Length: 182
Image (cartoon, rainbow, N blue to C red; front, side):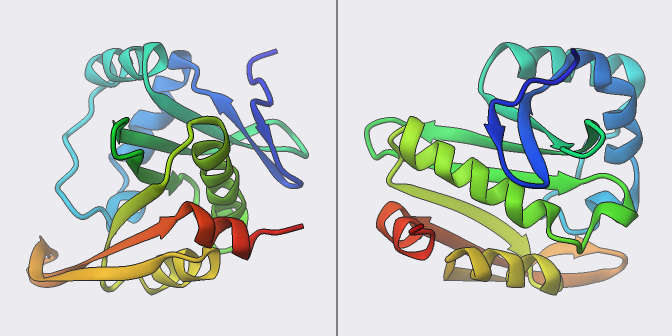
């Protein structure tokens, strides 16, 4: 078994990352369709650098493969990083690799699982993210989960010959719990 259901949803589950997946991650992280909404330039990943990068991530941190339940296919990555234990805060990151897996709810479900893990298992109080303002689909997803905008940095992201604003959003533990009561 390659993936393990650490956090299981209906259509996806989160598994500890497998560093042997570095080739597919290399493909995705060099694909402008995947990285177009990153708020900072992504490094150029070759196979060698990607392998060591994902080996390091597998050894530490809270990095998860997003796996489709129906066929155990790797479809993306989600993580909690920059965890501050005293303030009980963290940042999150996510991407879905292939276009056919975007816009169908997999990312939203994966984020809900990741937030539940952060608030329940890691005892976090606040989780933040940054998103490029033209990523309307991402902003809508984050709002649907309960994130609120707390700041905006004007023209701080340069891509494709233009400047875009960066939106900063966060969600507090009680906001997540109220939005996701069963």
